[in-house]
Length: 410
Image 1 (cartoon, one colour):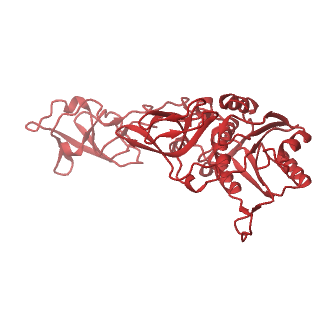
Image 2: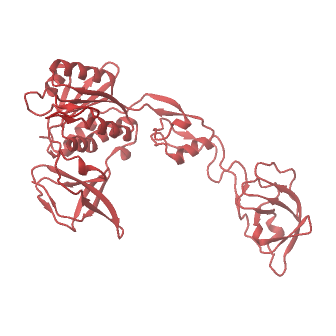
Image 3: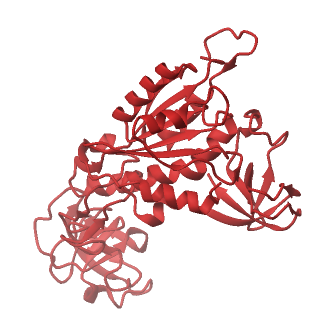
């Protein structure tokens, strides 16, 4: 059995980051990964503009204003947002201005309207002296034309989408998403729509792994349930390998009479890199690489138990998909935290053990609580709400409540 850290590195070494890109409409780019750096096409702000409703003035005219001795200026123009000022402000003049509007030439300061009093029709009293350039957003203050706004490898979330739109991008170049073929093996499996017969099990893995792939940024290709028939399994695995960047199968990787996956991988020309890992749950993990003319494929043969399958996805497959997707290394590495466990944690000490549960913030420190019920690899019921996996190292059999435990954040 490979140690977990060695298995992780072996898997990452098999993955080649994607180089193929595609142009997508900005409305469809959320959660996609930027393929090329974005430089600003404009200055931000585009021009000096007002951050406040008030009056545009020359600071030199109003620097001595006080409530007892206000300065009176003639209002010569009104400037709403979206309007081009028509004249240059002269000494003794002010312009009524609104938030976001262009500051007229000659003005260098905005006085907020709360510090003014309008008198007659065309005059305003400045009752409090402002500071120089107050409430003026200066052209290029946030970014200059040619400045780099977003780096390649950036995940496009709402803020990044806003930046792209503001700089004039209606389409953006992103990396192609990884295609992940998913198949479940076993004569005992049936789809959720079937009525269960004695000995049958509903195939939850197909749905769970498809959801995992979508959350990881991939495109799931669900190939359904494949019976324990060597010819049918060979055909399905071959089709999956040709169709995808990654293949995930569940079941058929132990040492039973009907566990054919490893043998078929060899027959199909796969270079088997991992056969088992010193992890619990998830020990029977098979990983192979296929080099095709057009692309390389990494095959993950996962255990059939639902928890084992998902733990394997969270611990190993997620990293592989992230690296393929074009994320920079700090982004595709797992997130680990040292937190306090609220309960005693137990393991047999022979394998690196993962226990599932929830993280919660208490008095400024994260705490880990075990999911209620049995920590069994077949018990997917108490997996609901899982936000972290507590890791118990090899040769450690217990971590006492109140102690520090390292957790993998999901």
